[in-house]
Each structure stands twice: as C-alpha cells, then as structure tokens.
Amino acid sequence: MSVPPSSRELIVEADGGSRGNPGPAGYGAVVLDPVTGETLAEAAEYIGVATNNVAEYKGLVAGLKVARELFPDATVHVRMDSKLVVEQMSGRWKIKHPDMKPLAAEAGRVFPAGRVRYEWIPRERNKHADRLANEAMDAGKRGRQWEPSASTAALDASAARNAAAPPPSGPPGDAAAGAARARAALAGLTGTTTATGSGAVGAATGRTAPATGDDVPALFGDTAPFGDSASGSESAVSPVPPRASGSESAVSAVPPRASGSEVASPASPQASTSGTVVPLPQAPGADTVLPSASPQAAAPAPAPRQGWSGGPDMGAPATFVLLRHGETALTPEKRFSGSGGTDPELSEAGLRQARAVAEALAARGTVQEIISSPLTRCRQTAAAVAARLGLDVRIEQGLRETDFGAWEGLTFAEVRERHPEDLDAWLASPKAAPTGGGESFAAVARRVAATRDRLTAAHAGRTVLLVTHVTPIKTLVRLALGAPPESLFRMELSAASISAVAYYADGNASVRLLNDTSHLRA
Image (cartoon, rainbow, N blue to C red; front, side):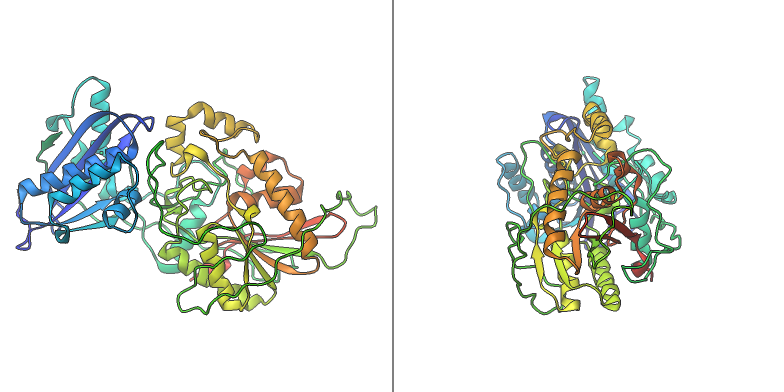
C-alpha cells in the first residue's frame, strides 16, 4: 500500500443504490491515493430494503470511517455523484427528511468539518463505488454479504477509466449527441465514462487514468432571419428507435428521485401564475430585468384551414422563436428532468450556452418580447438573453416541462430496469403517464396547445422568444406540422438550440427552423 503525501490527503468516492427505491439496497465506497490514484481500501454492504438516498448516505459514512482507520489525521476530499448528499453535507441545502438527518450527523462526526470537502462528480467518474454498491446488492440477492476477495470493482474501474469514452448512447431522441457537440464546441470540454449504485472492508489495488474526451463533429445550423427557411439547420428526423422525449439528455448530477425521501434544491425564485412577472436570476454582470405588462387573455384560435384554397391569411404572423434552455448537470447524463424534480440550475456549460445564444439573438435583432417557463434553468437562460437585448421577461406556467413523476432524475436504462411495464405503456401511448402520477404527453399537448392559442392571439404580428423545454418545443412543432404523437420520438433537440414557428390568424402554422445550434460553434 502506498502512503499519501505528507498532508495525508485522501479521496473518498462513495455511492449507494436501491433496486426499487425503496427496495433491496447496498452501498460502496473506495479510498484512493490522490497522487497515484491507487485504491487503498474498499467498503461495501447489502443493507436490506432502503431508498437510494439512505444507501448513498451509508456509503458516505462507510467511506469516511475507512479513511479514518487508514489515517486518522487525514484531510478528505469526498467525491459523489449524488447532488443531494453533496449539497446537504456542504451545508447549502437543508436536511428535512427524518431518515437523512441521523446519517448526515453521523457522517459529520467522523472527521472534523474543516478536514472534509465535498465535490459532485458525474456518474461516469464514480464507477468504482457504483460497482461496489451493485456487487453488494447482487450478494444480498443471493442471501449473502459482499466479500472483498470476490470483488472485481477495482479492476473494472481501472479498465473503464483507461478506455476511450464512447459516443453518446442510450435511447434515441433528445440531443444526446447534440448536447455533447455543443458542450465541446463551446469550451472544449472532455467527457468521461460512467455507472450507478454503494460492511465489509477490503484492501485492493488498481490505478486510475484520465478519460479521453468526446469526439467533436462539426455543428450545422442557419443564421438566416426567422422568417426564412433554415437551410443547413440540423435535421429533425432520426432513423433510430424511440427514446424518452422530454428527458434532459444529459447533464446533470442530481440523484435519482427517492420515493419518500427528501429531494432538496437550492433556493430559487417562486414560480408565479401565468402572465405574472417574477424576479429572475441575472446573468453575470447583467443589469436588472424589469417587469412588463401582462399579456391580455385571448379567445382560442380558429380551426386551421387546409391548403391555400380557402384564402389563407398571409398577414403578419405571431412568430415564436423557441429556445431550449442551456445545459444543467442532468443533461450530459441523459436523465429525465421535468417539472416534478429538483429544478436544477444551469451548469457552467449551460451558462456559456445562454450567453452564446443571447449574442446570436442580438445579432438577428428580431425578438421583441421574451416569455419563459417558470423553471430555474429556463429563467436563467431567459435572463441572459433579456440582459443582452434590454427586454423584460414574463413567466408562463404553460411552458413548463412534463412532470416525469417517479422517473425524475433517472436515466432511460434505470427506468427500463425499475418500471419496465410503465415505460412500455408510455412509449406506446400518449395517454400513458410516467410512474407515480407523472404527466402524459396527451396532457402536455392540451396544456401547450392552450398556451399557444392564448399567446398567438395576444402577440399577433410580433416575434416572441419562448424559453422552454424539450417536450413543449417538440409539441409545438408536432402540432404545427399536424404530425402524430409518435413524432415526438423522432426529433432531435439540443440544449440551447433555436427553433421557430409562425402562426397566422387563420390558424395555419409554418415551421421555419428546428434545432439550430450554429451559435454554439466555437
């Protein structure tokens, strides 16, 4: 076993998982040498029926205790892919759930507070602890406990870290590749490889190595005015099987939503009712965004005429520029992130995307008003654009993302594993809702259509920026095209991408742009 440097700094990576949430659960933790990356010790345990959050906290406690046994005077750098645990232990989020409080207190007593710091890392960088947690759960399934001698976690983690990161994968649809390209194009960010999961303690050896970055294909897009067709914009059609439309493709590192567990979030401005202005997060260095008057309520739009034989209204349309918000920590990890989850903020990449799209919209010079979803990621994106354009921002409840119920925070694969029948039903019918009282695509379509009718009537002849999410944008495009519900699974929509639809007074609509990401090119 190698000895860490004189400061005796140690890295603790921990994870926990529950197959059912609550369900059979286990944790894993590994102590690493920060200089060599060598595995100094591992811990894992099957803990019976528990939630994801309980398992994650137990993994943290075990990892800290193992570190203390190795070097009682060490300083510890804790790295976890649980945003909840990291934020709560860092003191930024309150701990309210009764199951979490004693575990957090126990973790806080292992080392003096000043000798432990916490960092959130993506799931792909927590693969070792995740594998240990899954080994513990596998052992529990066999009626046993995890045994160090049977573990291959250190070898698997080392192999994974030395392998080149694969291109974005998983269920097709919402901008896995597009988001990765946008991130890389903006800042040259690198990606890594990933996993889930979190007693017995065993020493192990193995070395870590930095993961390689994602490939960066060229981005395509069009910078023509919104009234022109978008030659060169990214294609909306994908010849791949269905994928979870509306899920945040990845970013983020908010933990899976635990049934009955506390899911805290940073303080954020409260959402308001439709048409009410609320305080907005400001872009760095931006002036205050001032309120504006409420849009007037309007009668539903008339039924659209088919074709041109009926004498269509070719007067100035209401043009909606549809901006998907920038990335959050959930986006790169392709996790469901709707209106029923933790309301994540923009990541650093997302903030850069918001500034980039603000510059692009300022150059176009056509946006006259800004309306945003009430969720934080949209409000932050809208604030950056508003500061650049000198416009106000209005909050519209109808533009919020789908509520994905118990799927919030999970990947498509995790939902497939935990709720296979519900997922199959959801993919097969727009009337099927996600597990746990989520919102069906049919319900979203009704909400979005009502919002569209109200806004088009109130903003005839104007160009309005709608800062919203994957499902509302895809729904507006689908309805404008008269396409069936399954078309939601056939569109790509990248973070901070721009689309546009024009609405005429006779009810006809024209899709003018889809998934333009040209402004995100370096």
